[in-house]
Length: 192
Image (cartoon, rainbow, N blue to C red; front, side, top):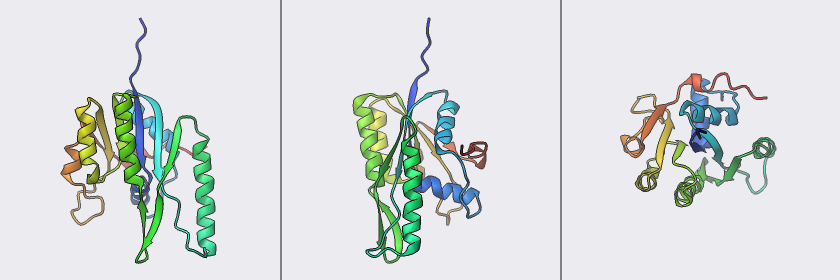
């Protein structure tokens, strides 16, 4: 008798993961292998990782890019190219928009929403691990759960109401399981 371990898909909002990493690194991003991070989440849930989808946006480029913008974009391109070489690791990109000198990712949440619905429609897996925090996901998460898909949310909350990490209970109630990320979840995941 062969026992099959159920599969999962890990969906990661890169901007959110970056904020968490910088928080744990006291302003400096922690260095860790994102693929190993994704694998560790699946293993923690006793699931096989079918694929990881990493949602990001290239850095903003002004019409006449400055030297630092060119360097930032070049580093981003190298990083994304290295991720795209990983089997079963997809990178999906939104865009970066500057509004009143504030840079914001656009389209990333929509890409995640589309994939949540497509994964449900295709019945690819019975469990999805989501690393995100936006309450805009609540309606789609509820819809996905109605279709029998289990949602496991990995998130961070520093429990400070004035903090950017303070979480609304609204998204927490739209998931089957909630797991608070800790600094230890990023450690021992060296970049090869």
